[in-house]
Length: 429
Image 1 (cartoon, rainbow, N blue to C red):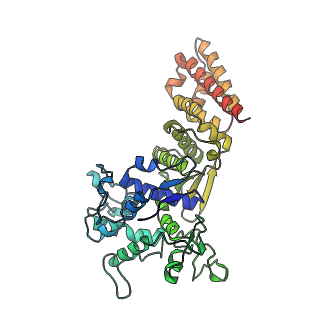
Image 2: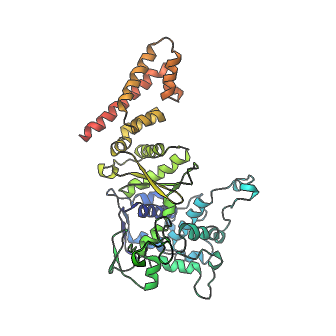
Image 3: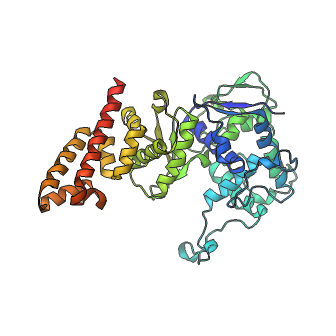
């Protein structure tokens, strides 16, 4: 029986890996099951029976009824005999990776699918064996180059020198929770025992194999290790979590240099919900990073029931990972606190204007009151001039907010919003 696992937030890369792991777990267990394990203090607790279930294969069918069977989860369990021996959570990791790397094509929707220069786009797998062949090479040639052989020819067959890739991968996952020992993990801070030199050098040293843009090559150029020795040591479990970090990131729908986005915070509970709503916001086509982060915070405030503590609101940042760089964007804590306040978020949502949200994010609160006063003046006029309409169009896009008969209603909502903001600011003092 495997021990229970308690995970605490650390750096953004580790956090993205844990969120990716939780997404893979939720594919099989359901989101509600995972959300029950997100603790108020920011940690994640997985009891021993859940850990045993996630890391056991499909051959030993204990508690198989726990699988959350839904119509859109056609690959909940594999049919291939070799793939059935994979740990459940690792199979779901592969399934979600295919969904991420190969979006549903026009061809699969019954339309003609053509890529650039008439080339046919890659379509999703029709069976489990094809699924793993679709993505294995991409995973270990682009995302985690070198950690495992990317040659899919050896997925199911051994070579003269080594076992099949599936068996190698399964053996690695079966060893991700070693005994306590003399080494301290640089990411989670837990101690672990070095079992053998080969396994330690391959999986327990942070190199470019875990993340190309941050890690360094241990044996060839470019090498940034002092005396060619990595000082960043990872426990096998953290290395396993890092293999999930691509699932933690959301692909930006806009051509922003192929950016991938992740919201990092001090709490896995906050990160789980914020990134869940980040995916929705990105899907709606918001362009500016401030808009994306602001709308994600609003969605979180409107949809989760729990009240968020002040500590958990600090240092919420948007991580923007591009091909060769990692950038960060954050809002002031005071603005974050406003957007996550249910009264403020509800009024902003009711008004529904991006220009009003911008004023709040720029902390131009007095302007809200000035707009409200001007709307009352416009309401009292018999007819509005061109300048009046230009003023209205500057702040309002929706007709419900700028129709002359509804200006007083909009003015009232703005004054309510101003009052709610002042109430939050007053409570901070």
